[in-house]
Length: 205
Image (cartoon, rainbow, N blue to C red):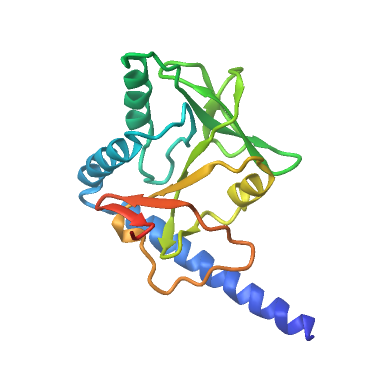
């Protein structure tokens, strides 16, 4: 086995992924109808959540033009309080473990105290650690088979590999992020479902 050839192939793939990632983020930020698309995806997400048994859901704080899942989740949380048998539903946002380069999730609610992490992303301050059974994940890009293009840090892949039991994972993104010819690498873990502003992208049936 030619290790230098493998290293060159890996470096080329990484470079191409980086270029694709940059182009998709720029395209997302420039979407003229991003707010209208976000409204549609809020609706898709809320309908998709109906009937799910989960009471602890992990999500993310939106950056770089990402879809914001928190309004739909806050509505989901309130709906739980209005049920005939009241459910205490909780929402978690990620906090980076710098040592293991993984994510833990801490309780979030509107108005809770926040602070910036090492990357300048807001995170809950001093709220309880929670373990989600359902995890909404932001997608820079995504493809058939449930594969996701993220920011390249590997935080979600490492987190999902370490979590036991593994939560049900759902990617969120706009339609412009769909990639027809995306080739997943060996370490890429497929998501269980992907939603965009048109509806459910994956699974296809």
